[in-house]
Structures are given as structure tokens and as C-alpha cells.
Image: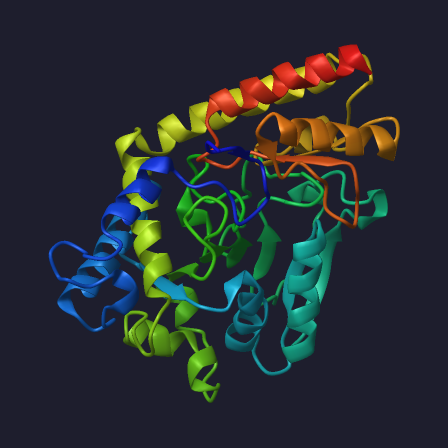
Length: 360
């Protein structure tokens, strides 16, 4: 069987060139006689992988030297609590903009270890829109303001990011990091699980500005302190070495195809093609998100009945397109089209959508 078009929301499709290079180096990495899976994280070979991965991220995103780049375990979900533990002072609080399931979980975890405050929410309309920054009720003394840039389940995404004029803006960018150009200087911290646009599951990137890092609380458990990982360059303990290596190969691919300018163009083209097919279907396919909040990464779609949706998923799978079932909490279909999904995959999907409509 040939490779399929993988529309899963994560772990997601990876660049074929990265997978093939990893395959070629799997048992003997650059003449060492070792797989990266077997290699010491303190070897000069792995330290070179780590440094190159950091440098590629700096180059692609435009990360200044006053930001540290960390590679941690535990997924973005660990960051929900770790962030609050480090940066909400005793008796203080942080503001959260709650725009979907993962934003809700971040807010919940903050309130387990400290105090989070909902500055805005779109739950009133089932997370189908993004509250505009002008409507956010921000506390003057909030330790930081937390947002989730892209909503993988409900399909909303910030088109632009606010300038909070001195407040620390923190962002869970797990599902759309590296998908377009943005000004990183607006953020005091970005964190992202790798398994959407950066590489495989198992490693989480944290991009942390020095001025926020300086406010971290002391006396935390060693592994839950950002200071530990900054001091040791992510090597305090054994990091997820192989996941970092695959991230390196994925970032090399991103650079080779033209960086974020080229990636953004393809992602825009994919989104426009798919949303045009939805909007032009005379209601056969229904989007669930306000047009000004639509995601380029994850597109929920409903059909008239659940039976019709099940038929769509089954017939698409027979044609080599998998992962189109919507999240269990919302049902329907969901098209996830991260960076490594080529335009040809969306073209094939849109062609199938037209055929499916004609036959049903």
C-alpha cells in the first residue's frame, strides 16, 4: 500500500523527506555505528543535533537572543501547570482567554496549582468564535495573559496577535506554530507540543523570554522549574532525543522549501480551497465557525446526518484519505492540514467532496 493522505489532528503527517532521511540514518547515524535512539544525550553528536535544532527554530521564526529555547517532555499539557507554578506569585493570579478545550484545560490546571482568572471566553457559543482583544477583561496585576493560538477541536485561529503593551503574553501554539509569519516579540513565552507542525510526539518546545524567566518562583520541584532547564540547556536529564532529531529534519525541510513565507502561502492556498468548497456546496457541507475566526489548520465540517458523515469517512478512507473523523466531543468531520500536508492532498479531498455530494 502506498502512503495515504493523513488528515489526523496529531500525531500528524510529517515531511516524506524527513522520514526518508531518518530511515537512511536509523541504524548508523553519520558513521557513528549507532542509531540516535541509542546515542548518549551528552555525546558531541547529539549536542550538535540539539544546537542545530535550536538554530533552525531561531532562523525560521526570527527568535532573538533574549529568548531561551527549551526541549522538554510531558507534552503541552504539562506546561499548563508548569507555567502557572513558575510565574504566578503567591497570592497573585494570571488571566486566561478561554477559546476551546485545550484553553479550558490550561485554565483548569492553573487553578489547581495557583489562581487563574477567565478574562474572556467563547464558550457561550460553543467556541465558534474568538473574543476580540478589545473585549478582554484584563487584570492590571495579572502575572501574564494566556491564549491558545489555534483551536484544534472547534476550528478557530487568531489571524493576528494583540500588542498588550508591556503585559506578558503567553501562548500555547501547539497546533499552528511554524504555519505562518508572526512577530515573536509580542510574546513573553510560547510553548508547543511537536506533533502537529514540528515533528513527532514526545517533545515540547518552550520559547521563553529572559524578562519573564527572571520572575520565576524559587523552591519548585527541580524538574518543574524552568531555571533548571535553562541552566542545563535542556540536558538536566535525558531529553526526548529521537523526537528532537526528527524535529531537526522537519525544520531542515521547512527551510529548504522557503521558510515561513513559502509555508504561509501554501497554508493560505489550502485553506482557501477547502473553505471555498464548503461555502460553495449549497449547504451540503456546513462549517461551524464564524468566518473571521476560521482556522487554517483544523476545519470542522457537518453534513445533514451522522450516517452521511460516517459514509463520507469510510469512502474517503477507501480513496487513501484517513483521519477525517471529528473529535468525539463535537462529531462530524474534521480536516487537519498542517504544514506537511501538501496542496495536492487538499485538491484530492475537494474533488472527492464534490463527487460525494453528487452521489448522495
